[in-house]
Length: 133
Length: 296
Image (cartoon, rainbow over all chains, first blue to last red; front, side, top):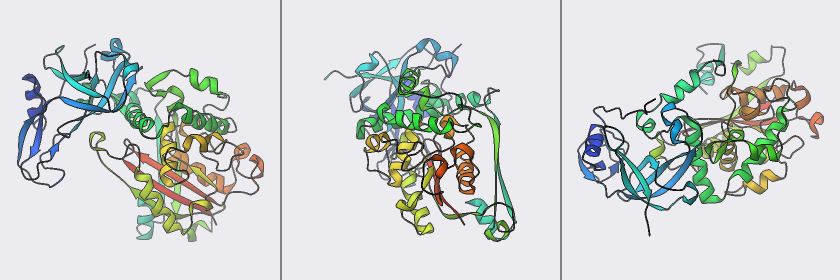
C-alpha cells in the first residue's frame, strides 16, 4: 500500500511548491519578523496578515524523536523501525519530520541535523540526517 | 465544568455525562488516529502515542526520566487493577520483568506504557448538593476545579516537558477548594500513558522536576502506599473510558463502594479518604482539567 501523500490546500501550497524546487520555505511576518510554522494566514505573534517567503538553510537540531515499531498505516510497514522527530530549524520553526540514513541508537536530543530530500514520490519530501561535526 | 455552569445558571436540574465506545471490537479508533493530520501522515506520524512519546523523550533529555520511572507507574496501577474485578487486566499481574519484556510501540514507550483500548461505557450525573442530599448515596461535592489549555499544535508547543496545563489548573482547583496539596488523600489521574501520570503529578507539585523516579519507587502510589493513584487500575490497566475513568473512580472511592480496592482499612490506610484530586487532559498535553472532590 502507498504512503499518504501531501494534501495541498491554499494554506500550505507555498510550502509544497518550495519542496518541488528542493527549497524549505516558510512564512515570515512582514510586520514583526516572526517565522511561523505551521502555515497560517495571520501571524500568531502579532496578528498581522502580510508575510513573505524565506528559504531555510535546512540546518537544525533535534528537539525530540521517537522510533516507530508499530505500523499504524500499512504504507509504513516495510519502513519499520523508522524515526519521527521534531527538528528546530536555525530560522526558528519547529518541524515534524523523519531522521533517515542513521542508526537510531546514535540519535539524541539537541544533535545537529541537515536536510536531505526524499525523492521517492512525486513531490520531494524534506527529511533530515545527522550532521557531521 | 460546563455541567456546573448550566446547573448554577438554573438551565437544568441534573446533567448526565456519558461515554461509550466499541473501540476494541471495531476499527474506529485506528481510523480516527490514521486520518488525523495529512501533513504528519506524510512522515508516518499518527495518533497520540507518538505525540506523547515525543514529549516523554524530551523529558528524558531534560530531567532524566525514562522507563526506570515509568515502570513504577505501570506496575503500581496494575496492582490496583488486580484488586478490581471490572478491570480488563484483573487476572494479569505485571512484574518488572513483564514491563521490560513488553514490546516497543513507539519508543520510548512500550505497550505497558500505553493505555488500553476498551469496549465499554460510563456515566456520571452532576446535580446540586441540595438535590443530592435527597438521594440515597453519600454526597460527593466538587470542592474546586481548574482548567488550562497551553497551546494548539505540537510544533508550537513549549509545554511538553512541563509546565503543562496541570500547573495552572491544579493551582486554580486547590485555591477554589481552599486546601493545600498535603490534604489530598488520593489522586485519579488521566493516564493515557505512564509519562502523563508523571508530568501531571510533577506539575501539581507532588514532587520536584526530575524527582519522580525516587518518589514513585517507594510504592508511593500502589496499594498501601502514601498517595494512592489510579485505584481502579486507570486507563492503563482498568479500561479506557476517557476522563470518566478517573472521575467515576474518585466518586465511587469517596462513596466507599469499591470492594477489594476500597481505600481505607481494606487496603492498609488508617482512614477512609475524604478528598480526592482528579485530572483530565486532551490533545498532546494541550488541554487540562483538574477537579477536587470531597465526601460531605
